[in-house]
Figure 1 (cartoon, rainbow, N blue to C red):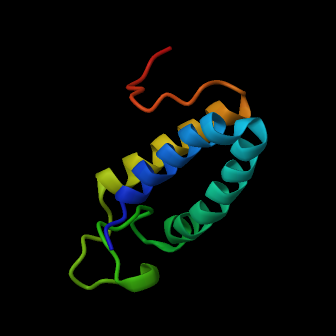
Figure 2 (spheres, helix red, strand yellow):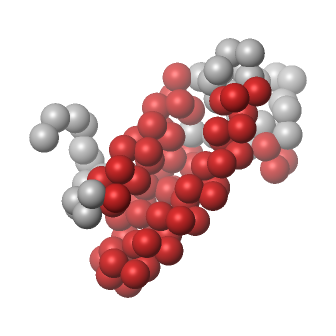
Length: 101
């Protein structure tokens, strides 16, 4: 299982939660997103590389053929964390945000 696509999935989910169900749905999705990221945080804490792998086996199990840390995996989840911060501040979640204000 590739790690980086979860970032795109979670970002889309956060964006469309408000569109589809308003603030209450966004709050529910924010909470669920944080619970999903908990496993990634555990990996960050336990990895000697302090990073996320390129890919895993089923359900996040170690994959011997994977790079132990990959910038793309990290970057995609950093974007999710940015979006969570935006949601906490009641700002819109813009999917094509590249940086700046």
